[in-house]
Image (cartoon, rainbow, N blue to C red; front, side, top):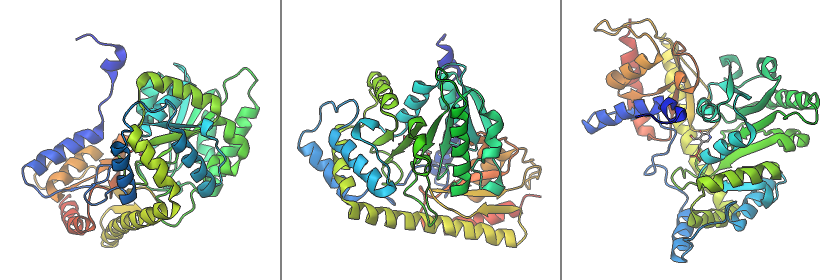
Length: 417
Ligand SMILES: Cc1ncc(COP(=O)(O)O)c(C=O)c1O
């Protein structure tokens, strides 16, 4: 079949491939801890009870026709109030756009800013920027980050690539690593973006910043920083990505939002109108009510993040114990989001049958079979397949499953010689 070049060149997701393997084995009755998915198991982590009640109530009240293209005004007002209370950020409803989860908003941000051939910069590992760059025909510049900086980019790493770039895509807490920007790190990057923009002419496209803070409420003790609170003059260049998916364990509820300069937000709205990527109206209404119940929101988020951080800490502790026992593993203390970053340096080793682990993907498939544990290699987030780092997500498994998996993992790794 001859289709568009875009359709023919779409890249499938490596995470989905691993997920399919896991599901096949599960269907055959095998015990497997699925640490791959950036989703929540909703039987372990249901959405907030009050949010559920309000969703039912909105359907009972027949809120089932088209929502306004920018989102219900009541929801945008609740978001505006929440941004002020939580982060001391000033955004009017006209500067806020609601959509069916955050993905359409990331796509709309790229589409609104990036012309074909424009330079887009993002750090790797990071989530899905490669796909959005492909969809917009961007000239993508992937900047490798390092373990020393918790895999968050530094100004020095980004600086050589800023000239002519139109978009810098950042995320904190970061998917896939569960690590966060320090104030100093983000400050230096912000200063650099401002300086770059000061050097550009009036008729030149500025360097815009996309700041994805969808995990901002899921932090385990560290403070979350954002560019506009640090430098109010960055407001005219920054588009935020945010929403309910992760912090309310509501990935299937599909209510996300962006906030940024009104002119950009209104173009994003016009674009998404044609895509029809609105959040369902009953869910919008429910979120607008729930967000105002600050005590309920905080109680839910605190309980939820304690459970997630408990699972991640258990995993981190287990890996550190294996490291102390001499295995070639390591992990970075979890700071936020749903993830733990794990190093398993076994490339070049062989299993008992003599099969060589050539790359990180080989190790993933070996561990699925031998340890009943599934991880995502950093190659799914833009790094080389020779990089021995992996993402473990705590959202799809219980603490008991993690505890039961750790000895299986150690046993399988010990067999590699
Ligand atoms: C960093 C980041 N941004 C955005 C999203 C997308 O969220 P949504 O489910 O609201 O589209 C994800 C989902 O994994 C994510 O990890």
